[in-house]
Image 1 (cartoon, rainbow, N blue to C red):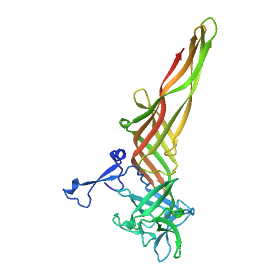
Image 2: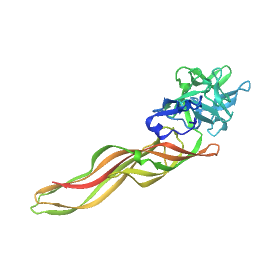
Image 3: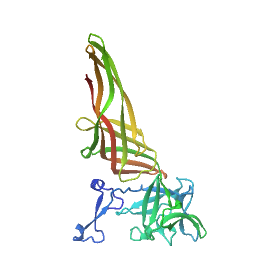
Image 4: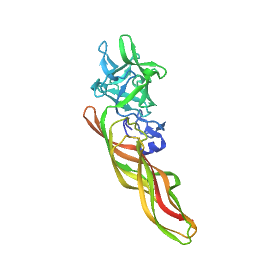
Length: 348
């Protein structure tokens, strides 16, 4: 499998990946596999830049001796020197390619330079482990010395990247940004056979008791009004998406009586991974007859449930370079909450 290959559907569900032995491609070893646990691991976006604790983006800049340093000194995400391309290895570690230098990051001795032409992951000085810290931040651990990379000023260098500390200090907490101006999500294909429906529970949406204290039966028309709230969320369980202005066009699944149906469509601006709530007002009339000296209680009841459905989709990105990149993704997960089976009950 290529380092940039999409995880298979099996990988997404099982959280493990079977890899052939690429160092011994003979027939005997063609059936030798290793199992790597990827459960819970998120892949970084492909086109990224990093911002330091000084509020500046990390950029490619020759500082001394014509060496390819990386310096936190740009204030523009569209600066071509800040752009990097993430190459994910089969074990979840990464190599980082500086688009400006046209080379991979490398530790030497502890400064991080963009000067490596090595396209493999055999040299640990060119391999990093990314730890997601939340809030759009990450830490980068260099496997050459197992230190975290931080913004460092020393030896005549100012705010350059250095694999300097064994713990994640303030200067080692990097904001991760995608060098993407806009994103479109379309071509959504739900795998309905893999739907997971859970948390089914009865809900009462309306209750009213009508009393008749007279000696005769009484008929009246009752206007029944109530609100119904649904939730929907499109997310990914492998690839990480970071605050890019996104538009999405997709059907909206909903639990029905015996299955999940897609009867409506959403098209518009959307923050990836955010839960949207939508409330609709419902109203209808019922003729209610209440016998003499008695009462009737009117209820509207339904079943509420949650569905989770994996899906594939097309992601179209416009990069800060103006380039359009179209990628077929298979790591989508939709989560929806809705109610179904509405029934008006009239009881004594």
